[in-house]
Image (cartoon, rainbow, N blue to C red):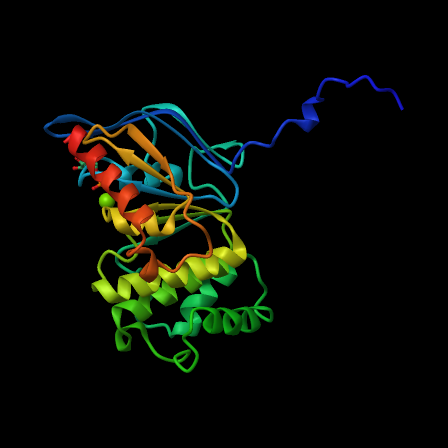
Length: 268
Ligand SMILES: Nc1ncnc2c1ncn2[C@@H]1O[C@H](COP(=O)(O)OP(=O)(O)O)[C@@H](O)[C@H]1O
Ligand SMILES: [Mg+2]
């Protein structure tokens, strides 16, 4: 074999990350004029990476997720999902909101089956997948309940199972546990990590809770007030697997959250 190293071929270059946002600006046109919501925002999310976005209320966090999911158009710049330019709802992007969007008249199992159907599973394949997910999110015994008969935390478990059933390449989560009480929120964070650690899909997780962001994410991105742009980024190299309950007493955890608090204070 020749000892001469050949230059890397184009095929050897790393594939584009699941999410690439480049110089994105978003403007809402209203009766009172135009409102710039996001300005010159760039962000890459790598395969399997857990990115949390924090920022003051109204800074454009939800808007960013809506642009990624093709619900709101970019005024300028670009969003690419798996290398494809987003100009409508892209395949492979799944959404979870603070308020669950479960069908109230359908059972837990039927709600989860919707995700499996969207993922292209045949009618015959769905029950096994649903049963597996019910087990994973610890809802065994509640398959035939309706959402109205469940607590807020259990409804978010159903939403999570439906999202998992869809098997998106990117999970967009907009304050998914924001409406839950403190303890349930911590439990759900731990559950999300447990599941994510087995699947390692890219997650963009929006929250205004800095501690939640640090406890869960590989990287925390801080946005400025509207028009939102990224003003700081912190790599969270706390060891995994993590237990969000125990982390809160870790001095490294305290140090990172304080730094992020000061980022937010600077841009306030
Ligand atoms: N559909 C819309 N029309 C007009 N303005 C909007 C619309 N959606 C959001 N905005 C404005 O854009 C800004 C960012 O909103 P949003 O992304 O919801 O903020 P966040 O999720 O960070 O709290 C806010 O000032 C909000 O009022
Ligand atoms: Mg929001």
